[in-house]
Length: 308
Image (cartoon, rainbow, N blue to C red; front, side):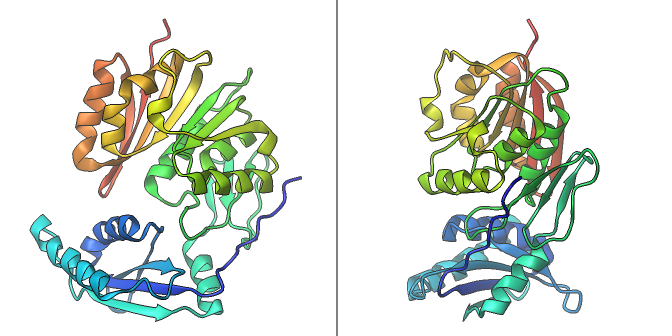
């Protein structure tokens, strides 16, 4: 039986909250994620019609005059990209324990994928339906739980490609919280390999795998994508690469080298304006595009390697 992971909160926590017009919230969230190295939460007010993007920071000294100025410059630059930021108010505040707990509960509901997979935080009372496997994953300050559209696309493709008879091998490139690898192990993929360049991500993924009872079914490593073997001993039936466009373009051949005949390659984490160049790169290597999904500024796609 899987153990339920606990949500841990730092002794002190601060929030950087930016309120903007809804048309700018995705861009602000993307910038804030890169700028703070945290996964921000976006909320919408029915009263004002505005969006607030919030990142949680452990360091009380983080909000320096330099960062205030850089934040203002970034918000001012939104208009150069055709986005109207609205009020663009910025607030820095200490977060009370209750506020932190309730914020997670409001913004991370259970996620059901095609009736076969349930991803839920530990506080949720949702339970898997008959024939549905469960992944329990609490949000942290840096890594998410499948709510982002690119991660959700990958989860759907992992469910669609799940083994029906013989176990299929899966490779998770840029594992983050480990959610894809954990879901794959629960769905019957074997072996499951996963890696990330970020050592902290690997440790978090290991803890999440252990909490879900699949630590012995996933090989997790700290690895740079450029270190993938060009002629691997093992090839995979499914490869998920939730990476930026520049990494996908640069390392396309290495990713394709990991594919078994007839394998599925799931590409995600790509800005909409960059997806065509990424798709063209992999099509030129011999893959076939099966489907793509674009939500606001993000695009993801499923590609298939020839069977012979």
